[in-house]
Image (tube, rainbow, N blue to C red):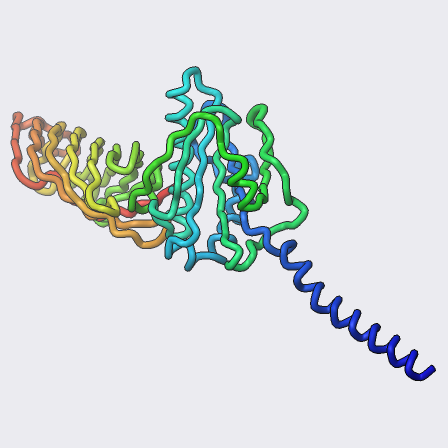
Length: 357
């Protein structure tokens, strides 16, 4: 009897040990869901990446968590980010591919600026059809720890978009699923290039202008990595000493820039300037208009992800035509006309730049 009870006890212990060894092995595949697709929605026919809309901000936050988890593997090239841009709302296939490419670049620029990635970390493909969205896929080798995320979104499929009001969907797939279901529609694969993130719209203000009590405000639109269009405007109006002294000015200065270097921080460009002035710092005042232009050059020093200092200098020619006047008993008396041409520095600035998107 005792021998029988001993055999039963041994079998129970053996079964318990076997189960303890099998449980981790059985649970391992459930933990390894390393391949995740993050989907970012776009308005029909548009290429602007609107982060706060369609839930893109939440999806972007999830993607950034994953990037942070595997940052070292991404930077070493072990884990690339697969970016697929889609567009089906344009009239022709070439237009669809062009919009899809721009959408992919918008998403990559956001990741480059936010998370310090480089173009070489992405493998980009652009497609016609399916919808108006961009997917970012991270395929993590099984040797690397599992990707964090919600398990209740497993094995979902990317639905076709039906308009502008499409929610966010995070899709999890396995590496085998990715290999067994390749993309069949026309696609364009881009060769990764080293670059840094470019934000396409920024607000500017020249600190040197403010130092001379001349409020200044401007904007810049980066058409692409190389070309930018900037416009700055200044205005001020001061009088003192019983209005016997006067300083008034307004100017508008558009500029086209060509950015240079790997990080696209330095630039050369061409600018045009026009405005009106009214100076009276002594017995004779001058009131008239100015016009000119020249070549510019400068460098943008990044302070953080959204702020930078733009150091610039312009050389060229300014022409001013003006009336001379004096003030007698509060009445301006005209004293003739004059003109002046100036060759040399026509612009200098230390501009604070705030990148919006």
